[in-house]
Amino acid sequence: MAWLQQTPGSGGRASPTVFEQQREELVREIAVGMEQVLQNINRLNRNLESVIAVGNEFGSVEALWSQFENFMGRPEEQGEEAGNGNVKRKVSGESDASKSGIKREDEGDSTAMP
Image 1: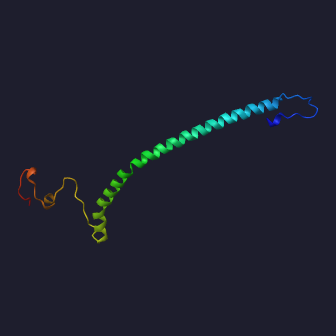
Image 2: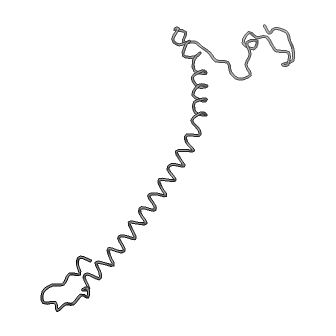
Image 3: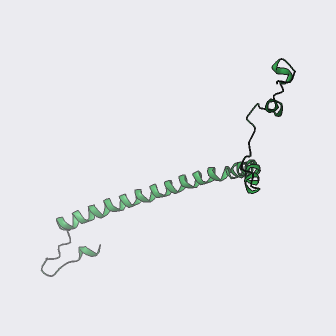
């Protein structure tokens, strides 16, 4: 190692000092820590790639729902564009006959209501 150079007057001693020993230990710890960080980053990258892959699988479903939403929103938007602000949507189970006061056959009496 570069820091184990002999200095004049050291008498050819090649043993590292306490400082050099501690520095070597810290460098080893840092190297181990950096290796762990690299492994964790690689694991995170793989997990993110798998999450993105799962998200991409829902692309066709999202497109279908988007088309459905656009289709269902058209009549209301067209009615407002034509200046007809009183566009009413049918309530689930409501028929044109119930608006006119005529009972349906399954409601009992089939006569017109006054």
